[in-house]
Length: 221
Image (cartoon, rainbow, N blue to C red; front, top):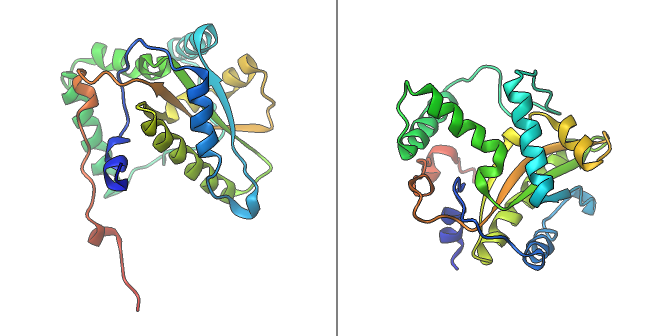
């Protein structure tokens, strides 16, 4: 598979087939991902693999927190409090494209809420991943985590699988740590849905626009 095509295909998947992913395949994906670079070879990544009743229990607990309107307690702020251009426009365009693919109108608040809550069900994927990093490490290790997570996504493609990285699954990290018996010293970076894509689902076929290279690159000779 050519690299460019692989990068395009690894776009987030939001609908999955009801088909389990065997443990050997998941281990193979993580075995490939572990070769991601990291400063001084710190290898800061920690991964929790969720399936079956454990994944369902986490989903139910997260949804219960949302319904109860509990305040979010993330270990870090993924998004800014105030959006500025050009990021504000890109964010709005992304949301518009998503809801158009789902066939949800701007004023259909009930379907929008149902769609959003699907985040906490890992979009129906049979496997969920949670990524943790030790709080004692500095920002560089979070950069390393990003490279590791991208490796997971690309390795999954090599196995015919699809993924969706999810910041939403890190909104209530204490719930995840308690359920999985993970110490508070581990910060929850994000989650990820992993499974076989439902190719017939329209939501899996939309793509966001990307800026051309000359819009974000300067050359210094």
